[in-house]
Length: 122
Image (cartoon, rainbow, N blue to C red; front, side):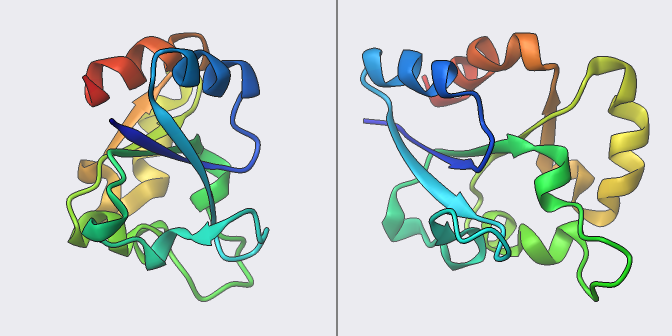
């Protein structure tokens, strides 16, 4: 069974639709919201097929000494795909904000999220 780890704020209807299809879902945290297991503590033993969430959940504020690459380090290390939600019109700017980790992240418009998840986990 595929397992999707989701950051806080992810559409619960999408998560429910995944559960109906037999896809497991678990909450993960960006380290600031205490939503679940810290995303940077994921390992291959967790069996996570994909991490999803809104772009702003991996975008530290200017007073933090972190980058999106820091927050998604475990995903890159363990080759866990990351799908971040941002409107299509913002994808170019989002890639710039993601910096070095942009090549490891797939961006998706909110209305296409469910289909994009299924394409990756199936």
